[in-house]
Structures are given as C-alpha cells and as structure tokens.
Image 1 (cartoon, one colour):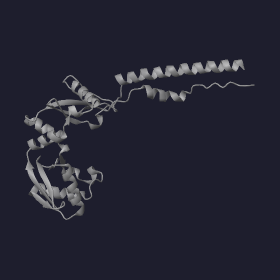
Image 2 (cartoon, helix red, strand yellow):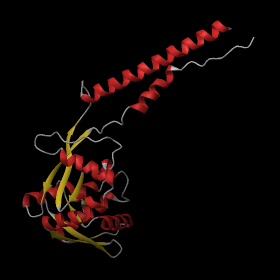
Image 3 (cartoon, rainbow, N blue to C red):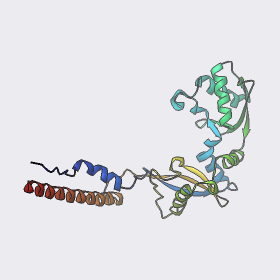
Length: 252
C-alpha cells in the first residue's frame, strides 16, 4: 500500500527564524558629540588629546606591548625619537630602527610623550634613509590645525548611511540625553569615535557610556516579544503538521 509521507516542521529551525526576525544588536557603547572650535584654547587641547592621533604618535606606542609586532626594532626606534625630542636631533645605526622611523614619518607629522613630564609636541622629520631624526617644538594650535585638516571627516563627503548615523548622534547629544547607541551594522560605526565637520562646525564624537545589556531593559522586552511571537508561529506549524500526519495515517 502506498504510504503518504508528511514532513513535520522541525523545531530546530526556530532559532534561525528568530535570528532572521530579530534586529541586529546594538553596540556596547553609546556616543555623544561635543561642539569644539579652533578659536577656543580649551577646545584646542580637547581636539589634540582626543583626535591628535591622526597626525601624531606618542613614543610609548612604539613598543612590543602596544604595537603588536608592528616595528622591527621598537626599543632603538623609541630611544632615537626620545633623544631627538630632548636634543633636537638624533642618529641611529640600526637598520630596523631606520626602517621604523621612515614608516612612522610617512604616517605622522608630530611626536610626543603621553606619559612624559611635559605635554610637548614636536614636529619631526627623518633624513638620510632614516639615520637622522630632527625634532622641533610645535604648538598645540599647529597640531590642532593639522588634526582638523587631515583627521576630521567632512559631513558632505560621507555616505547617506554614515550621515544618518552622525545625525542621530548629534540629535542625542544634549545635556538631557544619554547619547546614541547605534547598531553594530550601522554605517560609520567602525569609525567611531570620530571627528566630524558639518556645515563649518566641528563635532568631537566620543564614547559617552557603556551598556552591558543586563537587567530588564527596553531591548530585552523587544527581544522577548519577538521570541514569543516566533515561538507561537513554531507551535502553530507543529500543530498543523500533526493534524496532517493524523489525517494521512487515518486515510491509510
């Protein structure tokens, strides 16, 4: 006798269905924007301290600990830069240090020591294939100007999705707000924190808070509702499958 086969919906697909219907998770940080100006001395310090890394490097970063193997001779390279900062010029015979110094000069204009006694920045240059390093005092104003020129994202050059993310952060940056917490797949998230210039105004976007998602928050409620809805759909499918199976068995 021909037996009709009825495929029952498998509960194993429910997690996949839940994942497909759930929105992407949010980042663990919330962000806020602060308006800054090159005309304000305290803002100049803020610009350099928060975003100066786009044009400068601290000598403490040139180490095995912080560079993750980026440099060939981190000790010699760091010592050469430190000597140039102290004396105005320094020389090295290390082939590894020469290569490191040339690479640093390609990506940075200024050098400083974040943990030194003086928060002084130096404009440095590398000559003679990396053998000679020269360092001259630089004002924070110059470092800030270079940071804005080369490190700030121009709002008009961003993609529509990136602009939307920036605008949401700006809208949630008043004193009464707790910042904006974007989703992990939102445009521009991979570039946060960031420095953005919009309509001639500079915005310093930084991390405002950290969210661990413990507790019965809004996101948890939404997830619970979605989960219950998906579970309900699965239960209906299983029930329908059971009825079809029973009918097929009775007909046989």
